[in-house]
Length: 287
Image (cartoon, rainbow, N blue to C red; front, side):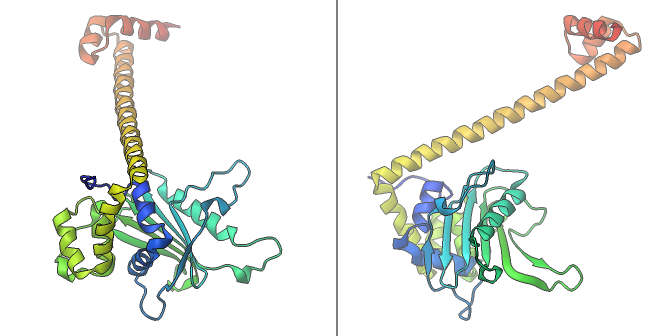
């Protein structure tokens, strides 16, 4: 069985299989330490993947929708999420799920001192923030001094469309991973990156193993179809909204022309509305 052509590395099925499996947790640790810019003094040395169903729902609240949830050797909670389709309120979504994870730690009778840092990493295949930088991180800081209030909050947004290639051989580990997932990166460029980065080489090698797993490949293809259908529906809805807006504007112009005592024929020629539509508008004005 051949490797999946132009594999979508942001496909949930592939992404979770690559970075959400105990067998390859060395890759996940490499990804986390690279993206979070951890050095030898604060490296994450181990990680345990958690059952996402452990996060309790709240009454009439949103069900958890997390791609990868894990706990590191120092107790920090990590949520990695991939988002392909643009969402205007994505920052609120990200904050909502961060807060759910943070609060989840504190069971009945436990003390606040037991709360551990919670880190959210969001890989976005669209532009969301009004900055040219492709990787933006957030903490809770003092407005005047910029001192961090508490280390428990950390949130990252990585906008893959904004990522631009520099000298591949000079890229940092974080940039290597971002380039690997970026749809703008070619397979040839990934191979060059892999020559100097064993983790990326391992990720590329896994793509063939993934392609040859019939169950994973089927689930991957079903997810791809769901993505295409979703994006198609989003496009159709957008186009429908545009047409409704145009029609509404035409009716507004027609009403103003009728109020100015223009003839139905004149209004029709200048708005594109049919005479029957204009008669209907005229009747509504006379009521």
